[in-house]
Image 1 (cartoon, one colour):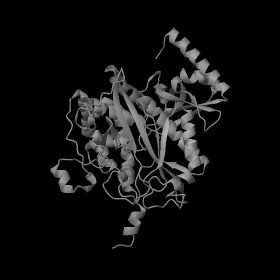
Image 2 (tube, rainbow, N blue to C red):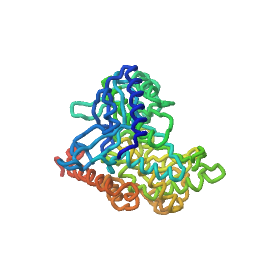
Image 3 (spheres, rainbow, N blue to C red):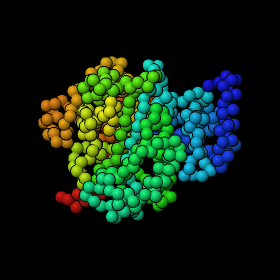
Image 4 (cartoon, one colour):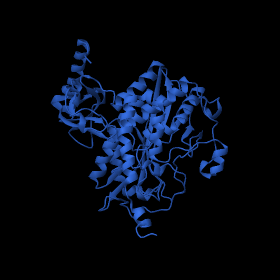
Length: 456
């Protein structure tokens, strides 16, 4: 991975300028950050004076200590290096004196194939070859909680108990400082936050910021998580992206709004003259997402808890707003793919995902739809929550996997998706997640004690 002397000089000049800029702003430490296979932010603190090391050779980590790398305990391939992307370097307003830089994985001097950020960049390169750009708007839903002595979630605001708490301004006012600190911190990092609201469950909120290209969107989501965790902890709260922390309340999704444009900025999915405002390319993308949805579930909803959300049913606020069936429709929030404004909102994803992997797999699925000219099923502009089981059979509408085990089986069978993402990575993902599913199946829950301890 050597670079030319001209590139080396340009990099050195960029490092010097960045260091001087950050020093003037009071920064003394750089957080060299990458993600593991779960999408969890990892890294080290590096003195700003060693910024050149981060973007040069990279920061060293013991490979076997990181989830999903599957590196040996000895030899040259036991060391994982995070090489910083200088374009991502920015100060962290909620941590004065600190800045973050996003790193790509390097092992034995070569780009590491199981680095999920590199997987996303590889899929983006496929779009670039066509002259296309994927823009992504991410909608994080989250809870602000506390934990009891057993580690279980508790709504800290006892007054946040309305039957329909959506858009409750009274509850929002009581956590306004936390939400405002999130907004201000993200705005200072280049986000365009345009709304925050109280969601359908007590203690649940959503923060929306403007879309960006896919790689920037993924990097920003990791930064959002870092900011939200820190700011909530400072206020004595727990920030949670858990898909379904309460059985009797709606869960949290991470809806992905996706649109394609060409080099001139012309939208490629939108066509107002066509049915549902989608072009043929948009319909191919929808078709690819639907065909691969069973396998995508493992990557977009990768926790055991994810499947407590992806079920049909009523909640205290009227509906779960979560998909359970593989269909699409015009502004239809009961389908896995919702079409609005000439873009696709993919509603399967939740906050337990590795966002780089989620976006990489979505691109791979959409490109399969385009390359194979897969024709989308007819749109469904009806409330699927009102359908009977028999009606789904009559209309040939399939169900999403209802457990993590089913989703992992679907991913293992989807050879085309695995080949597009990287078979080596998918194998490692399955090897990481299957024990998690087995552990859950063998665990004994409070529900079982209540039902079976003294019965029959």
